Image (cartoon, rainbow, N blue to C red; front, side):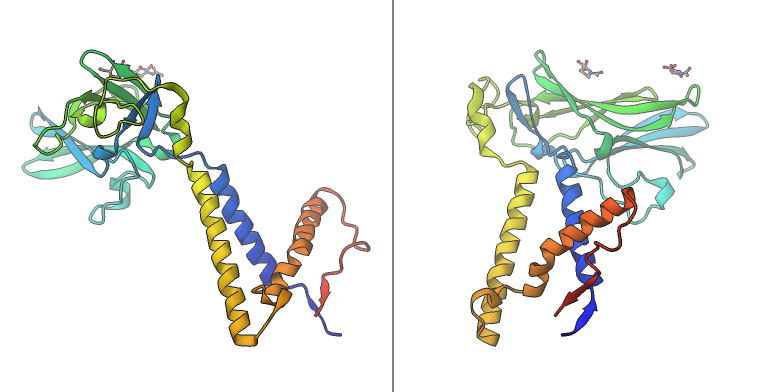
Length: 294
Ligand SMILES: *[C@@H]1O[C@H](CO)[C@@H](O)[C@H](O)[C@H]1NC(C)=O
Ligand SMILES: *[C@@H]1O[C@H](CO)[C@@H](O)[C@H](O)[C@H]1NC(C)=O
């Protein structure tokens, strides 16, 4: 009988799989442009993608340009031609850049992550006249221009319900920025609510009729688990087919990487005892010994 050290490769692979699945389960769903408020549904996907709004003001002898890049449904992409300190970090959805312009020379003076996925904490307020909805997103802290104390940044995007028109989607408008709150306005059909079942027709009037709406969509955790399950099923059947066609295996030998899967229960036990031994003093005598028979 050959003894060999417990295969730390397998153990680390197992731990890797475990650690990949835990954060995916623990993460909150990032905002995906679908939300409900007071039983009214909104779908902001027509506004997806990157948009830019600018405001330019004379501050002689220079001009001050405020440029907002926003992407509501996903994180902004990094800009290739801009150095890192001159752009918002990864995970930003609304980024305000203040530029000072003199004789056609631009100097970036502030880069402010106004809304970030990790701190987004969205809230919604339906508006009745004019009809629409306002959404509030949160971001990082940034020194206030008046007293340089850290101010939590946020953006209030007022979406005004305008029926679909033949022209292309209008772009957002810059309303104001006071050092902590950025106000934008956007006229779009995405500002109109719809009752869940009536997505294409009759937008905007009927509040939805209670419970029937929740069932239709899987959460992203649900999708993740389904994906893992499907991947596992494909792996098992492809592996079994391979073992069958290559080695003529049958029965339990069909399981791909059989040795690995047979060890999983022991690995779990090892993981648990490792975790416990960091809390309690190690009892080396009753330990599994770190060797397995092959
Ligand atoms: C800094 O100035 C802003 C705007 O005037 C104000 O809202 C904020 O409370 C001030 N912070 C401190 C610490 O004084
Ligand atoms: C956002 O803007 C809308 C429309 O101007 C206003 O009704 C709402 O109170 C604002 N929300 C916040 C948090 O400022």
